Amino acid sequence: MPTSFSAKVARRSIALLSSAALILCGSSAGANPNDSVDVIIHGGTIHDGGEGAPFVGDVAIREDRIVAIGPDIPRKAKRIIDAKGMIVTPGLIDPHTHADAFLRSSVRGERLNAPWLYQGVSTVMIGVDGAGTPDVAADAERLVRSGIGTNVVPFVGFGPVRQRVLGQDARAPTDAELGAMKALVAKGMCEGATGFSTGLFYAPQSFATKAEVVAVAREAAVRGGLYDTHQRDESSYSIGLLGSVEEAIAIGRQANMPVHFAHLKALGVDVHGQAAAVISAIEKARAAGIEVTADQYPWLASGSNLDAALLPRWALDGGGAALLKRLDDPATLARIRDEMQENLRRRGGAEALLLIGQGYPWVGKTLEEVAAEWKLDSRDAALRIIRQNIAVKQRGDNGGGTAVASFNMAQADVDLFMQQPWMVTSSDGSAGHPRMFASFPEKYVRYVRERRVISLTTFIRQSTGRTADIYKLDRRGYLRPGHYADVLVFDPNTYAPQADYIRPRELSVGVRQLFVNGQLAIDGGRATGVAAGRPLLRPLPANCAQKMQ
Ligand SMILES: [Zn+2]
Image (cartoon, rainbow, N blue to C red; front, side, top):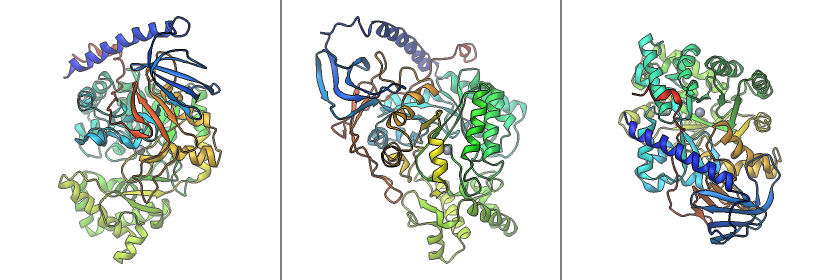
């Protein structure tokens, strides 16, 4: 049990809290104007992450903190950045990413998290969709030692927790097994996780009942964590989109914790137009006192694994080897093919599934095109690819399987969700889909500048302060004296995505400077190579000390 590290983190948090209190008290009037600071960002249009109107002014940074902000700061600085005509905001916060893979890479360049830095993102959440390890402290320690480019906020996830105790099995836990799962979640929370994430859409998490999830989630709730979920059904797969929204809200109500919907959407033709009904369910819960919020990425295609998109969940019981056995049995194969037909229809047909990922000849083609090339039914083409993915996995090859960009969202639903006062921006960034490299500038260009679905202030609020509020991030998300100096300077005329579905790995442009903890991660539009990110662990809840002996 790596108590030493988490204890150190806890002590540091407490020390930082008291010094911040001093800075906050003495920040505005008491500071000596002749005190030199490290950097002044001068003359930019400042959006501080809050609800207030933007203003032209300066931001002063010393070490890892913002020390002053105002219309004109008469101070000496080692460096003055001319930001006239630029927009100055808090570093953006991305609450739903799959950046874990890059942050843990043995390649230093990957750990810098450039796809996010070039969008202006200084903090990413990891371990979402139920994927977060319960070994939060050990993981954070590794990240600190190897050096990372952005801050990371970890979740403890239901996936590894259930897998450690129950494997891939589609069954209920015994009392002892439930106790073991609860202990793992408690451990993750007591090591600094910000909440409990689930991906009930995915096997084996999909095998859990609501009651099981509530029992396990409560361990996070009593330690101040929120419930962050890729819900069981965003479409019409099992309990339906609306049924699934109700389930997640019920989990929050019964476990007594805030609920956050990851990448909220109405996926597939069966549920197009249901955004309004989802919104009213969420509003009703909020009116009843449950904190319910959501994030969203600005693309009409979702990304998923081919097996998760097309295969019935019972076919995945027991994992890849068990699936292969089922595919070899003609009667079972027939049942699987029948259900695949329905899943294809739901997602708009084989022409709406673009195969993405890396290194396979079919990448960049639709499933329909590949099936035609192979002279196969589209289901059989998909199964051929899924078989190959399993083989790759079984070889222990980490190249990753074939994913799909599934064009399954209606523009009107995306727009309506985006306009809600509890919505924030996310990327859901993972390899193969342009959302990893371009979600924030994509939203700015398409939804703020071109289509005017939301205002610039709302876009920034949805990408900074509101997100920090939802996750209770300590002194992040706002440009305020005493806050950590995560600061973005971008050019409103050139900030833009370069990645698209065909070329998903192009870095975005238009970020002039990005400070992460007071250090320049991007300067003059280019990454500096500095690894200034930190794991942002929550101060330990009071009810951890005796539990974690
Ligand atoms: Zn997800």
